[in-house]
Amino acid sequence: MKQQNWYKIGHIFTPKDFPIGYNYASVPFIDRIENNILKVYFSSRNKYNKSLIFWATFNLNNNFSLLQVSQSPEFELGKLGEFDEYGAMGCQIFNTSTEKYLYYLGWNLNTSTPFRNAIGAVKWNFETKNYKKIFNGPLLDRSIHDPCFVASHHIIKKGDQFYMYYLSCDEWININDKLTHKYNIKIATSQNGLNWSPTGKIAIDYKSSKEYAISVPRVIKQDGIYKMWYSYRGSDSTPNYRIGYAESKDAITWVRKDNLVKIDISPTGWDSEMLCYPYIFIHQSQTYMLYNGNQYGATGFGVAKLKN
Image 1 (spheres, rainbow, N blue to C red):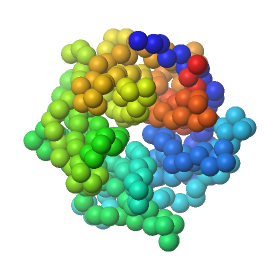
Image 2 (cartoon, rainbow, N blue to C red):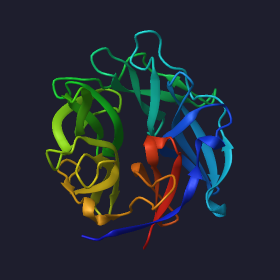
Image 3 (spheres, rainbow, N blue to C red):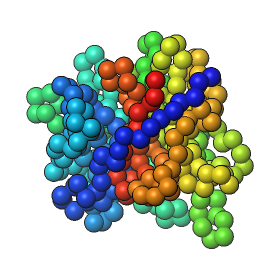
């Protein structure tokens, strides 16, 4: 086991960089890197508190300086009653040999609980240069394995099969008249990346009775080992989100090794209360992490680099 010593490069994007009146810049993830230009997708909220997906580009040769910000959402929200009527939060760009997809979680309001999420996707149209909806309904929704909702996720391909690691809400608990969700990370499989079968297998489970939220898994394979980063919270030592880590030899059975991740909140400033929603990428043999800070993305996102 080897410690991961991350050092923070900087706070590279805030909602103040967004000139069109939106708040938040949550769950950053990359599309691509071309000519040292990094394109990052994120989700923001409009004045009605509805989430929509935008992007920004950064110059890697100039300390991740901001270059451009999109001025309109990537696609429109769902119609009345559909799973993404009230919001869309991007999770991942996934490329096959012929297609390019943006997977996201959609959400709508509930009555007995504040919200309900499900997972959908849009497909890139190479002629019109924009994303189009594949279906009006979700690819993965609550099931016998996921009684309340499913949400943030990451997809990999292993052999001929796709694996999705996704947030699975097991229950809502009423504590002192306050509803608290409990969700961990489970696994679904697919042969084509669109038709998904939940397995009921838990990838990352709660490590104590106090832990209640594990979210935004990110998986890479390195040196024959599957490595996953995620956010977790709910103990005396981590009342707010921190970034955790796990490893697997087969992409199915995972061992939590949160203590190996050496990155923590700052003494003051935008990430002084929490660290959450990591995204790991490798560029020119260097490993980087995009992440959100306080208030789940209300303060924007930053980047850290793994020391060799």
